[in-house]
Length: 293
Image (tube, rainbow, N blue to C red; front, side):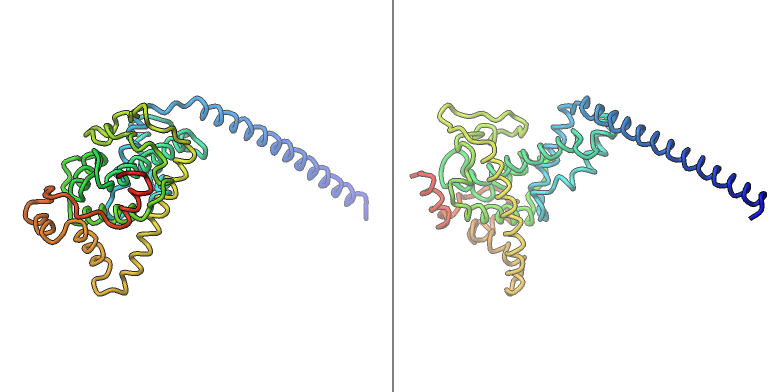
């Protein structure tokens, strides 16, 4: 190797070494910058305050979703809620984009309000099937009340599909006969549930027992996961029957309303006419379990 060739190689090596050193410095700088960005984002998340208007909007939308006639997902419906709430929140300037990053306060608010909506609807379903008392309702009254309390447009008519979904909810609830399903005071929310205003603050009577929030959340999750399973299994079974899924739902309504009431539904626009037929055997077991006479 001559002297010129050696010098050329030495200069190339030195140049590559310099480039490598500069690249290392850039990477170190970028790492520090990334850390600073994370600190800024984390700080921004902590300073975000979700306004009451946004919470009320999430709750209203969540409640309406719970009573949709074709809904099959309940426990994880916050995933479907996220893009809807985010778009509205940015439009109304309720919260910045960072509120909807992972573990952001916007996502947390969606989960909390969706869970609260499911819990309120669950209570209303269970209390409506008791054979007596201020919250007891026949199917027609129940359907009308569900729209008045949980639909964003209380003038929405009770359709045949909606009545069938309400009948399915009650049929499922009648099979949940254990005391654990009533993981809330039975006296609780009677006034607020019977009020036209779904945003009214729930009240409890002095005699109402205290309920462990974790127990209530567990019962709430189990109820809606169970209802998802109920819909899936009943639909699969109905495929093998002459009437199919539609026939199964019609039978549920007929079992609650009776032939004469079923005719009245079509003649008088779903107006409440008579009380329900005798409580089913499962409801009787529920009443016995809870100590009602």
